[in-house]
Amino acid sequence: MNLFEVAHFVPEKPMYEQGLILLPHLATLGWGVGPGGEVIDTFPYFVSGVLHLISSAVLGFGGIYHALLGPETLEESFPFFGYVWKDRNKMTTILGIHLILLGIGAFLLVFKALYFGGVYDTWAPGGGDVRKITNLTLSPSVIFGYLLKSPFGGEGWIVSVDDLEDIIGGHVWLGSICIFGGIWHILTKPFAWARRALVWSGEAYLSYSLGALSVFGFIACCFVWFNNTAYPSEFYGPTGPEASQAQAFTFLVRDQRLGANVGSAQGPTGLGKYLMRSPTGEVIFGGETMRFWDLRAPWLEPLRGPNGLDLSRLKKDIQPWQERPCVIFLRFSSTRVPGCVEHTVSHTPV
Image (cartoon, rainbow, N blue to C red; front, side):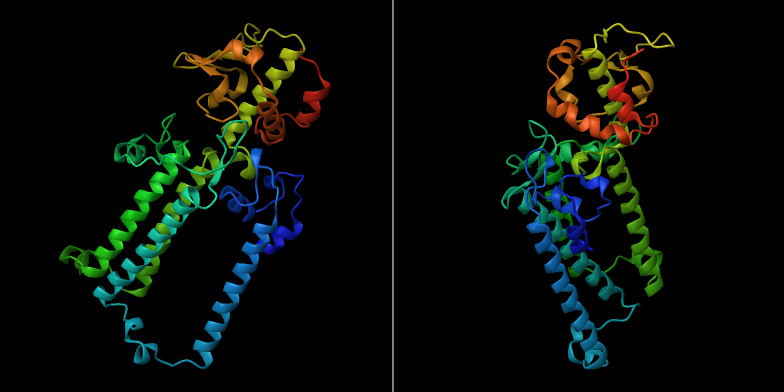
């Protein structure tokens, strides 16, 4: 799949317009991209595909060997790999091994971010860039504070993280907990309450695993939909709120250049056409996009002041790197009119 995407990749088009699944993840890790998320080298993607192809061949030949040539009962030759489903101690040992491997995987991301080229940061000045993380956030009050946030409204639970230092620092904590938890599971036996409460069978273990994957899947869905730090918009496309706010921003920039007074113009309902007040008193974009007023995005934050959007900055400080992604995002806005890109260019404000 990786090689297929590389073969069909068009560098001139955004990744999210090409239906890519794997390349955005490689780009997020900092491979082959430069300032603004521009793909400058596809060779790392090719190497990744070849390495996975070789690995799959090794696994395939290993499967053929064990099916045709290997011992019929593996534990006769290697007792460590033998087990029965009802062996509680062996099951917790296997669980511990898996936790250690997950912890090592978390630390691989940490090492990549710290020492091996860095990762892509959409919040880097000038529209995003690859950078090394130099100041990890390891404070437990910060890392675990995300878990205590409300999942509703502006707080956004762990999905609200918008700082790579916090994300990588969280992986340090997560990797450490997984490794120490894995060692603990290997060295200890299940408690009496666990032996009574849990079902010790192959079907039960499958159910537990599928349940865990389901939870992870729902969390990942929230991250993809709302978080533009872990999933940069340059590669995955705009989040739902970001697409809507990009529409309002693009129309504001267009009409302001055509002479509109964006600070006082009113819409058909008497509310601000371009700007209005949020429920907390901040200045936000007006119109239909007001329901996403608490969005944070790298192209939007430089225009904020202590009381929300700063009118003077909107009039004087808007840069091309802020306009460009919003015009591209405009076509993905759920509130757009048909042909909104052409409408933006060819029509003057009413």
